[in-house]
Length: 84
Image (tube, rainbow, N blue to C red; front, side):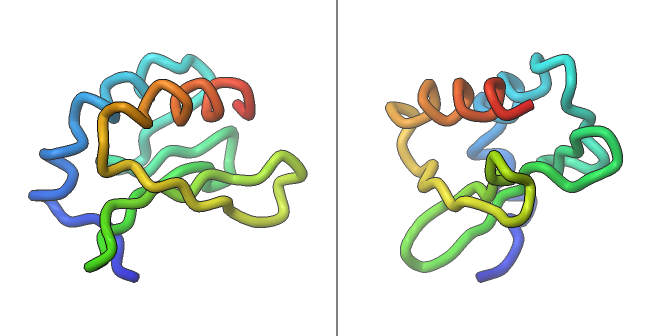
């Protein structure tokens, strides 16, 4: 599964804007967010859809969320905010 390209990130820009509003997150490059000095969240594109990987609560791995539909974004942003 490859990291999201420019066209995909354009499509996800409203979601990315919401993530930028989380004070603890720093966007190192477009759509790639860090928490302190560790990668925290990034996006992928795949024939099955658009996905975001977010660091798990224990910080040891990433959990994948499907983010094709804006209807899923509230839950995703809430998760990112809570984990940050």
